[in-house]
View: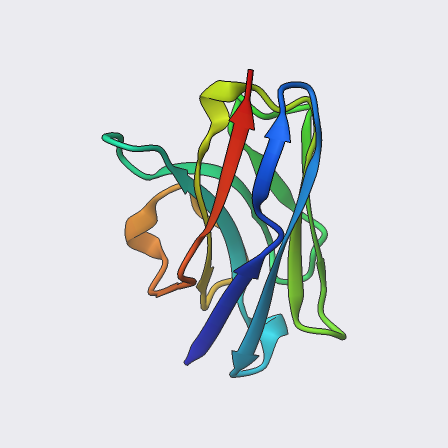
Length: 124
């Protein structure tokens, strides 16, 4: 079972950047594909980015493609989300999630393990 802890959220101006981290413990990290999701107030949780357990395959929501980068370091059990050119509409709680599979998924239902989330606020 994976335990996930996100960090790196905060307040940033529109156009700015943040780097989120998600530290995992428990079962061997390299057995999990990982995903980042976000949930804004009053909205459903949505997929942002995913990465395969090897790190060789990534997937991005259209809204973030070209601005966000997901990566992982299996040696230190951490997945990252580099977010550039942020806009106020991306204010949300950002969650990392893990699934015991080779590849990530865009569905929240496919991830049994979740972190507690980290708040990202983008001011205009």
